[in-house]
Image 1 (cartoon, rainbow, N blue to C red):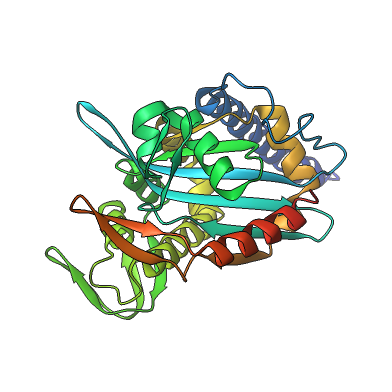
Image 2: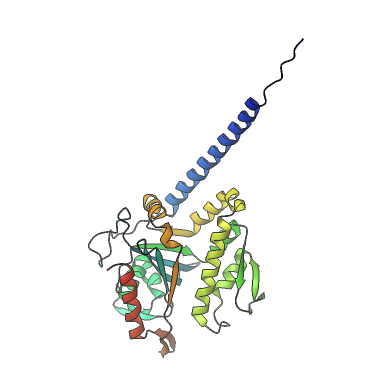
Length: 305
C-alpha cells in the first residue's frame, strides 16, 4: 500500500494568508483610528486665507507654507496663555524647514485689541486667531496653519509612547527632580517639568526652546517604534485630547506626500539680540529691530514671497 505524503505548502500558504489578513485588519484598524483622530483634532477657523496672501496655499503645486505651533498652558477657570510659540516655514523645493522660536515675553502689538503687550497674552485675549494675527503682524508674513498643543496634558502623549530617552546637555534640578547631563529617561510628568524649566538655564528661554526640540524629537523616535505601533490606540487618544489644528485630513495627506523631504532638514532661528525692559513693574522682551528685519526677510525668502 502506498501512503501519499501530505503536501506542506497548502498549510504554509494558509498560515501566510491568515497572517496577511491579520495585518490587513490591523492596518485598517490603524487607518480608521487615524482618520477618527484627525476628525477630532480638526478645528476650522473663520478666515479662509491670510490677509498677507492673495489666495490659499496649494499643496498640489508644492507651494511653501507656514505653521504656527502654540503650546498652551491651560488652567482651570482660565483660558491660559501660549507658553510656547514656534513658527515653521516649509519649502519643498529647497527641501528644508526653518523653525523660529518667539520669546513669549516679546512686547508687540496685539492685533484686535488696539494696544501692545506680551505676545503670549494674545491667546488669552482672542484665542488662536488673535495669536495668528499678532504673529503675522510681528513677522510681516502669512501664517497659513495653526497647531495648538495643550502643554498640561502633553505628558499624556509622552506616556502613550512609553516614555522617552534623550541626551540632556545640562545638569539642573527643578522642584524635587534632578536632571543629570547625558542620556536620561523621562516619563510624561518628568518631560513636562524638563521643558518648562528656564531660570536655571544660563541661556534662559533659548535653552528652554532647545529642550523642547529634544523632547519632540524623542517623541517622534519612540512613536515610530514597533512598541508604539502596537500601542497606537493610546497614542491617537492622547493626540485627540491634546492637539487642535485647522489643517484637515486631505491637507495632511498632501503634506505627507509632497513635503516629507522638506521636514527632514530643520534650520533653527532665534531672536538673541533683543533686551529686557521693565514697564510698570512688568518685564518685557524688546526686539532688536535690525535682527527682526533680518529674520523677516529670511522667512519671506524661504516662503518665496
